[in-house]
Length: 476
Ligand code: NAD
Image (cartoon, rainbow, N blue to C red; front, side, top):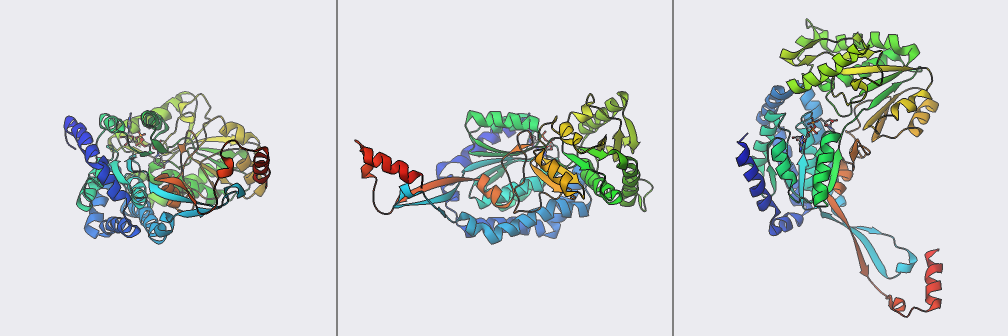
């Protein structure tokens, strides 16, 4: 990364180059074919073995992410989106003709999808590649000029992305600005036409405040405390394995990871036992311990390690019990998957998003207790119901609100490009994936065209007869 004053000068320079009216107009008018060519260039770059090896190295240096996890969670989602866009972009870009009320007789109505213009993508560090690439390809599909601000915390991946974009594109089309908070603050002063931000609710508020100065629209993909509810009807071995998988993926540093567990009291002890067995199966086979496993990620940096250790220590000091795991090593940024029992609302671990491999457990006797506990928190990004009882599933769905919901399935809500992905209020504003992302990056422009007849009868003075006729027709 370059020095700070240079980076801030770069913010000004790149903004000037990209936001020039003729540049925006040129990119706006690109055809489906031209936009797809850009996306295909990205696809080819990603699929080139030497580039994949470089990305692998970058993600290992940033997060100790294993090769196979990288393929599944960083590369495959981008390839899925590219495939989806390739087969649908033509239809998405086409004007969409709509019906009109009878009072608009003679007028044709359509929606024209025009690009927002100059858009900014700000990304977090936990999936530092796909959380840049996925919004990027949709922003390109919608015909925008794009500025990318990757996370400075995953600096190796940010450098990989910068190199890739510099090799593939002119900076007036797509540019990457690396940098930390002061650089991002300088970027946020610019009047972009749309900001697509992925990160914490705290920084989401900063982004939205900055955007408000220019009445710039935002998509905020945020986080929060996502609950997983396990009732007494489940196969606990299966469910414990699912939750162990979800909570250990990326060492729990996933926005849609279960943050805390609500479990029927009759299932808790067996859950703890089966969770432990699952972790052993996943990471300890052939290794002296989970810490020796190449499949288990590390915490991104010391600041986040100490934050997690602080949450764990303060919970223990207030009476929480480590029911499983609890090992940590600051020198290796390692925290083992951990279950916490005897937790209560006074503990910060039940107040803040954990974003790590620690799972506090709250037990309940009847399903009616669950919404009261969950609804004390802001609306979550993900909401997981593990149950075989339709009645319980419907009850929980109808007594809560969340960005998305998984029933007997965890973590895969981002994968289906036909489903909107995103939060609600504190967990996010706007939706992404497939056409939902295309629309976020587009202005849905309503266009009316007079084909025949006219509105002369509405010119003043309007007769009583005409006014009554309009009211009557409006009700038809
Ligand atoms: P973060 O909010 O700290 O940072 C995100 C981005 O904002 C980074 O690029 C960072 O440089 C920038 N930033 C940080 N502080 C800033 C400030 N004061 N002013 C301007 N910019 C600032 O988030 P993070 O720690 O990188 O990621 C973790 C958070 O992201 C969690 O809350 C997680 O739930 C959320 N997340 C959400 C999704 C989703 O799709 N909804 C996906 C991944 C992560």
